[in-house]
Image 1 (cartoon, rainbow, N blue to C red):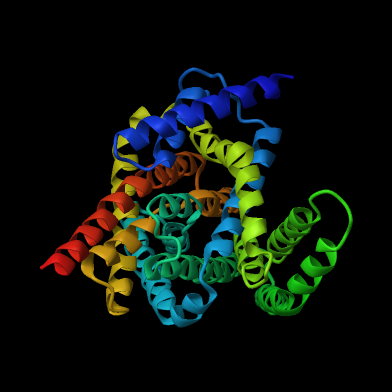
Image 2: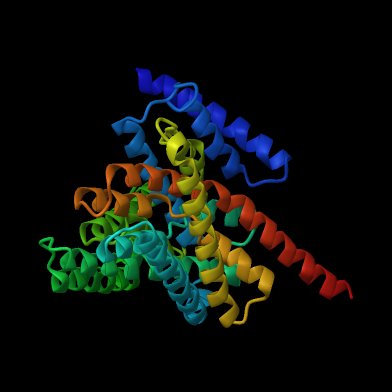
Length: 386
């Protein structure tokens, strides 16, 4: 029953904190992240980092990315692949090389420095998706470029990680990893084209309560599971499932009901759980390292992805808005960091430091997006009225 009480606290605190930050002119997700820190072991200890909280959180992020897919304009997605590739690749190259140099300066081996660079190249746009929704940018060219770049980023970083692990002497079959990725994306595209419309149409005809939403959730979780099984992030599978569902006639009905389920329970748990992971134990001796690596992580992704967006002919403010959306390393970087710890490519001390850096990048992303996209909108308004 302890988790039931924690759930009451989480839901109440997330809505109040979100409302306060909106009043202060910031995205609600910022308040939810910050109140998670207050509720967790780092401050008041009202919410614990438990297995069931983690499972609820995982469902929350999967549903969030499924809704992002539902809201994506498929035609715009097809047209923006060049912009997505430019943002994704540029947003990997800059953090990787600067991160590698930072590792060398920190007296790491070539392999360890390469791992640090790769970790800083990761991106998780689950937080950015919520900010995009609140800024009404989800279906814009910028929003589509961000989501496409996130898919590219995930694939490139995971494949590069597999290559690095094989060099580290781990038992990694690089060819098999590439084959798994190819099988997933090939199967996902085929399933999105043929299977999803067929399944939703058949299930919608069943004379049972909420058959359509059940069918959509089955597709969402199946795609997420298959993605995770083949080494692709579950959120990418959920996003593709949402994109496939958006091409059917049931899109609006599915979105409305998934949104209700998600934002009433699972998504707030996801946002709060990020803050709950924060621990201030033993960080004071490493505070300068955390600050330095956090600044490095923020600037390299911001500048790298923004440069890619600028090459794709976005305005400077829109480019930096896109770059800001790619700053959050989120759960993807935490998974990579855990792999590095298990493989002795990261020390326990550096692992703890990098967890704090990942959390900093996650917290600063929403206000940065708000700032740059607001400037971009103001610039457009001036041009219209001029």
